[in-house]
Image 1 (cartoon, helix red, strand yellow):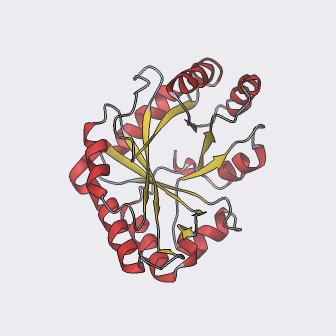
Image 2 (cartoon, helix red, strand yellow):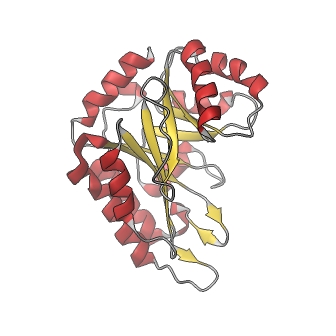
Length: 255
């Protein structure tokens, strides 16, 4: 399937009032099946970090389970490996998201390679919630904007996220992490995390087709835990929100 047809199908589903839901589960110690059982969710997308080589086994796990992979590429990627990576990503002509981090020049360089060598790719430009004045790559090289939104005790302003989404020129996804607590003082509580989760997912009501997807990013950083699976209360709320908002028609098995 070409990126154009895939993107058209994506936009049509955005009109349904539902969200395309996904997750990044590296470091959790579980696979896709285990994660979905623990959290009680059925996601459509799973994010995969790429260091040097094409992560074929992880990508094929996604396809085998009816999920769409999103490759995460950052500035540490050797430029010489990009053509082979793009060729491998497009080998089967299956839908795949390519999220390219780094400065705008690096993004454009990578995006041009994927446009030429992987026509089934949907290109995702990530921007930071903390840097709302981002440089946009343009609609010729960016299909999706992905706002990396990390909420913790020092950052509790979801309204800033709302503003970025509202002003975007292309459809927006959120790569979301919500901290349950800070191990150095426990200043951010489970209740705060639950309130933030509810606020962000409910933004779909007000933003319509501007916001069409949320990917939950599971990680731990600087003593703060963002792993959904580590807190049963947060996990229950997260699972309920995905069940409420997720578009069941978005997986590969229903395409």
